[in-house]
Amino acid sequence: MEWSCRGKDICFYHQGKQLLTLIGKEKCKDELRKIGIGIYEWRRICVPTSQMEMEIHTAFIPDFYMIPGINYNGNGFGTFCEYTDDRYHGFPWKYGWHRASVPAMTQSQGRIAGLSVSTTLLGQPNDHSCMSMYKDGDYMVQKIIWPETEEPRQLHLYRFGTPFYTQMDKKACFVSYLVIETEAIPKMGYKKALEFAFLKEDSKRITSYSPKQIEKLGITFAKNLYTEEADGFCGFNIGLYYENGAWRKRSANKYEIGWCGQNALLANALLREAVCNPTDIEAKEIGFSVLDSWIRYAYLPIGVIHSYYDPGQIRYLEACNMGTAGIAYFEAYDLAKELGIKKESYKKTAYDICTFAIKHQKKNGAFAKCWKEDGSVAIEEGTVGAFLAMPLIEAYKRSRDASYLAAAVHALEHYYAELEEEGFTTAGALDIFSIDKESSIPLFKCAIMLYEVTREEKWLLRAENAAWYLSTWQYTCTEKFNQDTTLGQTGYDSYGGTLVSTVHEGMDSFALSYIPELYKLSKYTGKSIWTKRANAIWINGCQHLSDGTLVINGKERPAGSQDESYELSRQSVWGSCSEWLVAWPGAFRLDALAKCRNKIEEIGYD
Image (cartoon, rainbow, N blue to C red; front, top):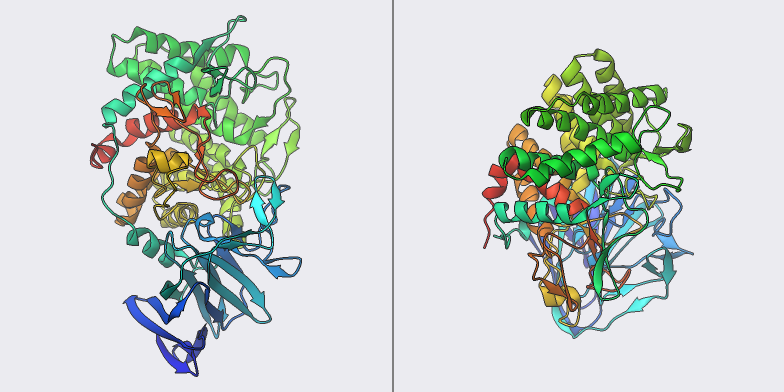
């Protein structure tokens, strides 16, 4: 890679081919410093000013562009309000730096004379900036702009609001970073930039609790959520909300077998607690009561377990819930055996989910997102259907029936082709139909599972590609919040958390669910970046975890409880927390501790 000045601009070349141009500015001095292969620090020295733009123009027609966590090639999948295309009524979008998982990052790629070129411009955290990216004829414009601005409209949850403007003090030096790849994987030319940004902010972070304490808090909260209904059904309530001066269990939409409610995973955690601590009779009784109740009360006439238990409500049967339930019931069968109890009904429940999946698999290999209770399709589209491949792979491992493996591979070939062709995955956040993070989780998990079953390198490669896509949603910096905000007062650290979707840009810790697979990917590839990312997820996901004395916004929180999400942008109330103490974070932490406790214990705690 080389560069040369052309007037006030700087042009980059590779093997004599121009790749991009850094657009100069009058009365400004631009300095470039190479800090890695294809990675440059771009420093602009100027007369002190409170307004600046640092801008690059690509030398190619882009075939893919991305702002991580915000805009994937123009978005447009789904039905909710989001940033679409590169402009709004002809005016280029400007996004606050903190909306992206990497500060002020824009990335575009295309081909130049046989080269697959990716150019990424990224900024610094808490730098009062914003970013913009738009097509202009046969090239892409990528900018970092000061001061922070969001226009021509500002995205709020499910709606657009008026533009947002700020002011800043004058300064004489502006800094951004440039990352260039000349052999980029199509629609994934962001890998080098993501790794650079993540490691640049990497530092020693620890949790406030030991793994043993976190485990105890998780079990305590699960027991707190446990509920026995008048009709005999037993389950874990989906979460707690604050009303009339107290935290209360939700009174509607109360029970879910996977996703937010995670009834099956929590039941297994209690059975595992009983295995490790035989004196905890309560844990054993609750675990079996919940798993048995779902089979007794929530089995549908079509021969498969429901995703929900809400008498009187018509609810969909969902691929996400069924896939996680299938894996959980296979595991529950094993845990019951360890406790000296034979539960053939658990194994049958898991195999029934696999039978349903094969029966409803489409010719192209895909599954629907969800079905009605009679088995007819309710919503067709969505990568989220890949969750059903998980129990299929597990069924093959246990039975060696090749039909299960064939169905899983058929599905995953379809979904991986979709990721490679589109550059994103869809419809995993069940309440928001859009491009998102959660829908790629089964692609990652399944690829790891298939690699372990077949040892075929293509599955390891696909696992890593899925992990990189997931990494576009992982926050790479610590955002500073004012002391008049909740997150400023609690010292919340955004580094390592994950954004939800292009519609809901809040941060959550749902990535806790794939920590075990990240550790495995690190082992199989020999790359420490995946261990570092897993560690960051764990540390981030243990924040706001109450020991029973934690007070936030004047409310003391029950032991083991935690917020579902946090607001890093002005999509809602900046620097706020959800105050929705949902079941799934504790379930995922307990599952991760069961599968990779040794790795988690290496992280450290205070």
